[in-house]
Image 1 (cartoon, rainbow, N blue to C red):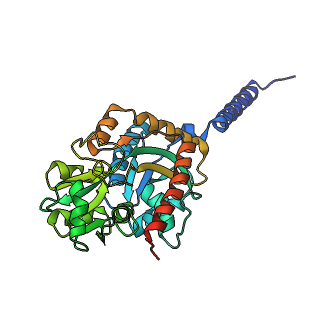
Image 2: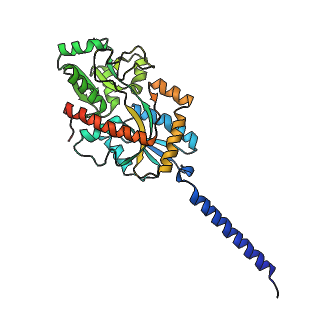
Image 3: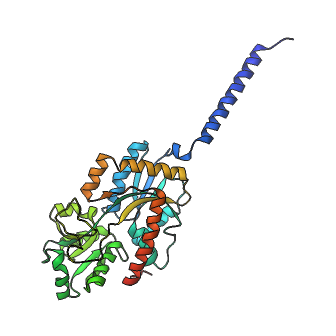
Length: 334
């Protein structure tokens, strides 16, 4: 029997190629989705205007993730409707880990109670990825405002009812509710002036168009250092390490503001758990990075490391807590 050695050799090579292909396919099938992530640019949507804490933290962590992943991490501001525009965009984005939401307690835990109707579910439509930081909020005033300390604020406002204005990032925003909480707890009549974002409120406070604004410490740290604004007090149960000379509201006799809101990243619901786990692990390592810690400290932000499940429980608890505050304040947006 004659054997065509060329044919046998070609056949053997063909079987070898098929085997290699099969092995590669099997290896790819056994690879977790998170292990290969990301293979293209990632977008972090900030649902507020530039200049606030969400924007600053997103850009710090976005740059570090880009370096770690070897892929561009792009920060995109999609402001509007108290954060609802950007939040809704992410809720309806593909659940593949490539579109993330830079969220905080204001947009995610408060809006559901403030707005009569939303086009998304603040909890059900998102997969918690990782918290980034807790951030105290500050009450800052124009340099010409006669009140020098938070302890002097309540007596002054009561002596001038209806004449002291405070700005916020918009109706129903966290900094709006902080002012309403002071009114509720102290019997004052601070007048709310809503803006389309925190930047406008800060600009008008600096120029003297309004006397004060409640805002996140990172968004105003530079203005305090530059003596453009004076900080009267910060929220939370302890003073900020960045501004140790600024008293807390509690120290100043104004109770009910012992809180430091969280900021974190969410993905659309249904994002593969392996991808969520990888992102959480990578972010957790970055939050221990010396450079990140220094940049956070410069903003007055404290790193906050959690697991996705823990972040989910925090979100659920805050939705319930702020629903009670909103109800008591009577704030509502139709």
